[in-house]
Image (cartoon, rainbow, N blue to C red):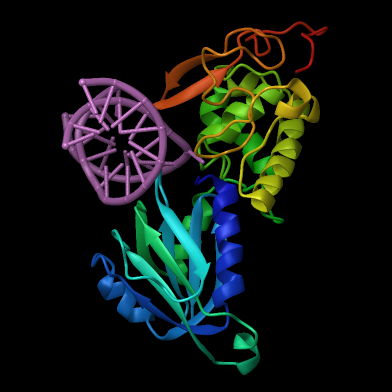
Length: 292
DNA sequence: CCTCTATGGCGAA
DNA sequence: TCGCCCTAGAGGC
């Protein structure tokens, strides 16, 4: 599940359940024990996402930096924590105590369990700053500056499909949003970044902001327009891991929802690209193809 | 039971 | 470009 929308959603959930409260922090699995001890029984000040990185802030300017990688999961739930089934590397449990009483008022007991993450580490304010500084603009952040991404893309010979996934160019875009954004903008994934027009990029950025905000709201990645939904087209809804309705992601060999051509796939930098060869030609006349 | 795959990214070659 | 990190679900035998 972890593209940027997932991390922003988790940050919100952590704030809702733990901000302002003193929490117990542990590592049943054992690999984070020492660091957990440092922030154990201290207050959660906040939680924030930058791209796919999650930073949980504790008092004294200490942060737990989490990156879920491909298959990491952070479960945030109300109630008492179950016995730690599986390899729980980080567990946060609310104590019901707060430095400021109002912060704990009306809150339900809650816990958060982290499994399978690529990164779980304690970082300082300075390290946090360095991490944030090296990430490209995140479409889910109010302070994001798309001009920074455009400066990189417009100067690069690299395929736009690679640039969109480069976290130093854009923060938070993963393989699903990449594939779907390129489809929605009729753009071939291997087209060199420097051949894009500024207006094309800005339209993609605006679209991405909306798509990812929707993703934060629903917890899924849905990218098909109303006229291409299962209900509108009379097909069975998609049912797999991410659960959303998409045009091309993991649909290789199947007919394009817009033109019927077979969706293609190819590996680029160890990740699968998916695109429609008819809707997303490398070169397009000004008249263009029918808009998907 | 087994193998394969995945919405990611790092570091070694 | 490849192996690895290390989890869980799907599908094959």
